[in-house]
Length: 112
Length: 114
Image (cartoon, rainbow over all chains, first blue to last red; front, top):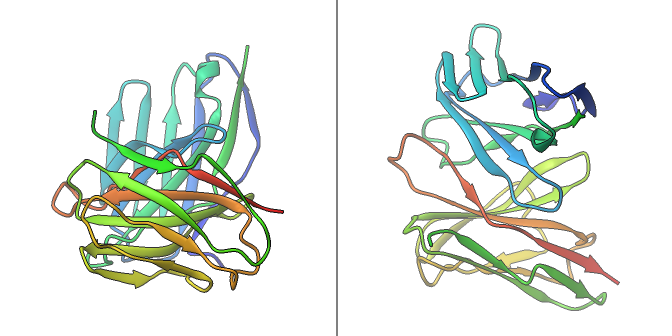
């Protein structure tokens, strides 16, 4: 079993929909949680960063962490075609040498 | 303009050849990382360095080598011992104390073995 599980998709939604992307993990020591967006043939771009449990909002994006369930989510409101990309979750533990453990990524397509 | 640069963008290698991928950052970050990305497998850590003149193996270091002689630079050599080197290679950097382990990525190098 992988430390971080993420549904690869593809996930196809109409423009304007609310998108929910999720990851589950098994290592209870993870404290830092990140979401990256990766366009085709490009490097990942950091979207959201959260520490421990709770919600964080940035514009149309909301990151949610539920440590009791070992489950993190990224919500995208009013999705746009420009949101079409692969979304990677990543997480790390304190004292882990700054190493991140990544999910495999979910491919999202927002259609007109 | 601060950021991470990787070169070349595309690289073709014949079997049995060593190749070196360049990674430079001007973000003044202490730590640098090399990842390999294959379809359906996410990012896998090859090597990382938390400080100049020091580096550690990641999860898939076999067939790769690195050096860290300058803070700004962390080149990766893909040796002929790497059995399946065709992949997308990503370099990243971070600095402790900026809220955790946020890593910032370069644009990547796509390596193809002919």
